[in-house]
Figure 1 (tube, helix red, strand yellow):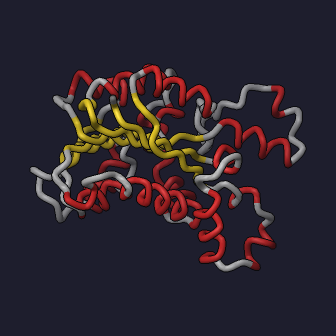
Figure 2 (figure 1 turned 30 degrees about the horizontal axis):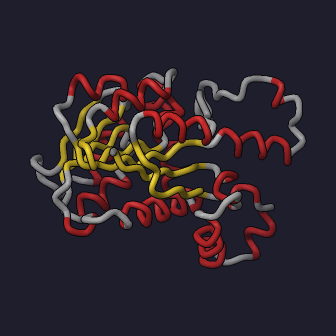
Length: 252
């Protein structure tokens, strides 16, 4: 995925994802997972946020005393992150306009935590991008990997009767928010295991929200919807139907 295309989509990401109820659900469940890591509240970690977007998750990590390298391929995305995080000094947060594939050659590492949130599915070779990033992770360090679930995309097409769409490649295309490489959860888990990481937490983000009929969604309070999302987010088989899946992993 090229930087200019992300530059073009920056505002749509803000309005359709980051500032929307579905974006809030994703972020809150992600932060709950991160908060489960020993030492999260004590600060002091060196963190790489590869594909940081507009700095939403980074804001919470900085507030807890961690030091971050923020990377993104889109300069407009990074500029939003800079504005969001302007109260933090340059020794606490650094910004790099880099693709994931170049992180290992451009950044010193190693890191206590590497975040790849909705990144791999936008790469032409997701596994190669993961491998490059993991080369910067300390032994005993953690990977926070959030990815767009191909199975959920297929299931949504089935529910809508889009059978002909399923006969064509499901990759996204220019101008849409559908990633170019939606990922199959079982394959991603194999990649992580083969890279020497142990999965500690699996969380599905939006296990049913995206499937709800709009009229039903309006009838339920957002608080009740989120409570049910949280209740089912870590339960199988529901988590594997979520739009996004979060794997929290430890490097052996």
